[in-house]
Amino acid sequence: MSSRIAVLECTHYDKDEIKRIILKGFEFIGEPEVKDKSVLLKPNLLMPAEPHYAVTTHPTVVEAVGEILVEFGAKEILVGDSPGNALSNIDNLYRRTGMLSLAEKKGFKLVNFSKEGIVEVENPNGVVPTIPLTRIVKTVDYIVNLPKLKTHNFTLITCAIKNTFGTIPGFNKSKFHSIAPSPKEFSKLLVEIFRAVRPSLNIVDAIEGMEGDGPSGGTPRRFNRILMSYDGVAIDTVGGWMLGYKPYEIYTTKIAGDMGLGVSSLEDIEIFGDKLDKLFGADVKRVSTVYNVLEKISSPILSFLSRRLVKLIRIYPEIDDSKCIKCEICLRSCPKGAITRTNSKMTIDYKKCISCYCCHELCPQRAIKIRKNKLAEMLWLARD
Ligand code: SF4
Ligand code: SF4
Image 1 (cartoon, rainbow, N blue to C red):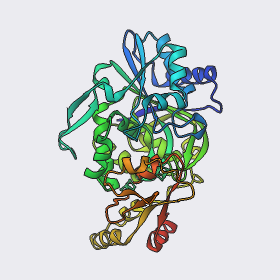
Image 2: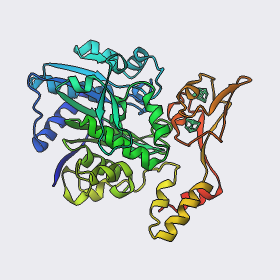
Image 3: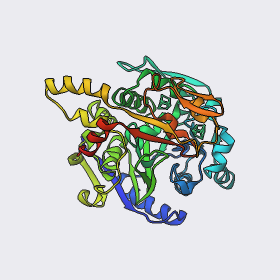
């Protein structure tokens, strides 16, 4: 099996330029068959944040893709996502991320995933028996996945596979962190969600992504690229490479490849645009976590030791009181109820904390830092 990806240079969020580039990409991967179809565009709208924070898919990319699909004959364009904070005001999310003004301007329909109802999709041999997806993903004819290329503290990267997590509305997202607390288990669950959604097409906003402690607390980083493919696993293989990771280092990419959901070996991906060696993100700042380092220890004895070592490693969230505005988003998003508000101060109970970093991901003030104990620091320094 092989897959095609277009990796196209794009340096500005200019709609006409992005359209020209995407049409060029379709010459290589083939035009999407959307005539008379209802199409859902699924950007990454993790939290209410303006486009310049580089946390969410830029509205100009969403606009360009939507316009092209209308020109290809799409019957209607819907746009939607479910943010990480289940109690987030969806109108505020769509307003701040630029989706509201885009929808008003272009006649696209904004969808509230939580109000569409849930459809339980069978999940054979999965971490959970069924996956509760927003019903809209099963009523539209065509789904276009529009991720943002970013580092991610828990899964190392977020791109095509991780972006489908947003099709789980409401509190089920944090429940899944409890059910699958380790990065490996959680990554398997993410791949199963991706399998249940199976986007038809993936177009990545990698013009400006994020490095460091993403997906929200890192630093915006210019990659100046748009990635396009019908194979979301191949997209993540190349996206991870651009963030400085080999495909086998990313659980979601490896698991999805092993499950036959797409191509996860670079040799089997045909790239239009750049050469692979030019794309490798050797200087991209990695996330602070180190769990994947232990996976490199392969012999049974070392593997046994590494399991013991895991218990001694501490990579934990810490709240900076000087930045915290007591909005309680972290408290409401914590899957283990580990955060409380006492005496006008937010406190983390580390006995309950499973280090899922949801609080870090969703804090609007960037008031939560990821800290490491000495052992974690040593492993982090030795991670390559
Ligand atoms: S740490 Fe962040 S999310 Fe939690 S209450 Fe403070 S500002 Fe809000
Ligand atoms: S305190 Fe933060 S990292 Fe710990 S379980 Fe809660 S959300 Fe996850």
